[in-house]
Image 1: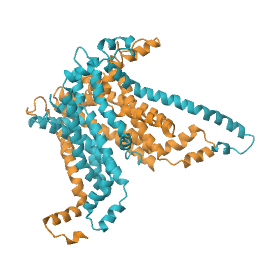
Image 2: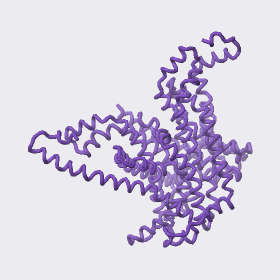
Image 3: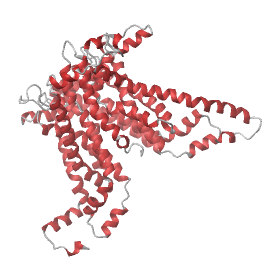
Image 4: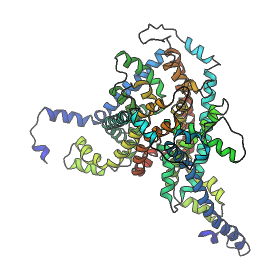
Length: 291
Length: 306
């Protein structure tokens, strides 16, 4: 576009224009190739996992049937038949939903208050939870909850997952409220609403997109969480990331079953991600660009 | 309005009090929760690190002062190698993730056809469950039947032990981390890039700057704060990596502790050996190291902001 304006002198003009033109012709092609490489790099391993989940263990061990094989549902039958996966799927959903809901109830008003009144120290306290290694909390929790004989209960798992969810929600909602205009709320107060009433009836409905963002991300983080459930869950309350280890025995691994279980864990979360892409991206980058 | 006409009652008194103190009424529940669930456990961890607590939950423990700290800081067999591994893992992963992330973000910056599909591809590793991702790569890097060695054989390169080798395990895990988390860096940097105004770039273009000059002298300094935020966010998580290490190598970071980072070491001390005193000491030192790194980075960020 503006490249012709770079040098007005006739002597240099053709020379500067020439390489620019060639480059602008080469760049789109280069870009397409690079983008294809990127897509392939990120998708191919996942595709390989899905392929393997439809193979018999004989086919998995045979390099000649890497891409050509007769698909079988046998692995999925193993997962749902022998292993009690329906229970584990329920556990993951229930713990994720409950910890997300409770964290939203606690976190959204707190984030509003911290954003509105610039409570920097309080915000730092909540965000400290992002930094602390989870094990350092798990040790005291484990000691307390095993004394109370609560290890293995849903309550303890929900509580522990709230530790991940709450700071995340406060973090996302704070940057959301920061960008929300407060004039409407002030107007509502002039019209007779109490300050809390104005928050509940004006700002809260306006922040539904932010709440959706925070909620979806919090659910994903809970679903993917492994360490807390590894220590605090029991045989009945195991979540999916813990249950997948049933397929890893000391001496041998049932690769087909393992891949089917891995697919079952990742599919729900990917379906959610595909439909809520916009929210996830805005949540993951919340506050990051404001410095 | 109707508020004035409403009869006064105990609820109104409460409502007035709540509205007057709304700053704390709204924030307190979350703050109390955080304090109970975080401050209290961290305090307890600090206390445990000064005792010889171990074994069964009810066993008596004695206060031993800083003995654990002396033992841990002079332990060159498990602790310091774990520190080095943590630094190598975090540093290696960060270096590649920031570099690749910057390149990919620049590629995706200007609009193009099929943008939506590329973005979906980038989002997939990011949301995939780390444990499942670990299992997936475990199959791909399996020395005998894995696809990685099959691919090497097409080029006549001998098979590698990948995750099962003592020297190759850590680099392989760094690779897996790069695969899963580079998209995070891309998304953050892309958000930073799209929020930039076009004017400085255009001005540099008019002045005849090459694409590289425009990036290095104009775009990059402008998104430096975002860049450092991405390092912070990714660095904190990389330091604490546990899921993938455990999913691929099991307890203790492999039979020779070849991928035992501080997090894995502390976990093993706590829940495989019930050595709560020593594990708490490791955790406190680990925590202080993280705070130190963050402190250094935020100073850098403040400087680039001003």
